[in-house]
Image (tube, rainbow, N blue to C red; front, side):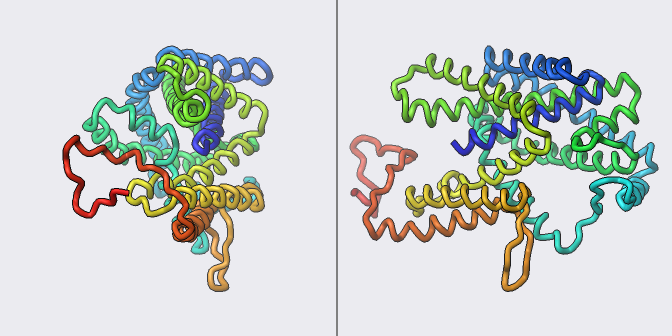
Length: 389
């Protein structure tokens, strides 16, 4: 349930990126016509994933990866050449950031009091990423363990490309790109349109659009799979056949995409971004049960559930009370330190789970069955020290 809840705004965020690219490319006219263009693009995605499931984004992802790599590197090299290298780029961005005429200007360098914020945000985001259903779905769908190993080895290179996207944001500031108020996500597409010739602009913007479509499709499939396997079968239809499960998953996948479209059209861009930040706080609260559960079963399952409830409620209240900011201030030995709200909520989660486990064991609360233990072969003797109860 947490995975589905956290994935919905994530899909909407991909739609926001697609809309920004279409707008920069002149393919998103104002009014209903622009909305229809976005719906048409997403309808193609819905039909492809409905008919072909995970195969559709998998095949497209091969092309997407190559095009995104090439496009981003080409844009970065062009930007550095136009702005006389990285030193001049940062100097120009800093001087524009100090300009009072530019709204919402921020310093390029972190101030010392922001170090804990950056560190906890990086750590919490890395821990939360692996908890999302689409990451697990992609891993479980690998054709073999060797394929999964090769893919994981290549992930740092993809992370480096994301770092280059961050550099493009600074380049947009240095080049004086003026994104519309409340639409900062358009800065990079506008930078591409301003610096590159028309033909290359179309290629790069197309690559960015496809780069948003692929994860959106995988996320919708993952949300549908999570619902069918963990909710529908568990609580509503335990005897559902594989064909019936597939039909339900297809319907849920389409529903997830429609929900994302409603998110985009019904909410302001900033609200969708805020909900995605809140989704990161939510998904991290599954870390004790999912990740820690891989290494130890000492934590009681009911204690884990209680910790999850405290983390979900506490994390949500932290973000809401902070004006929908995922950064909160905590008091440590009389000193106020700003940290990522998801990690603070996770700390509450773990404290509750660890504190309740011995109490529930003392009360002789029954523990859940470990379904991951393989049954012993027929006729074999139990290992020494095995608890036969």
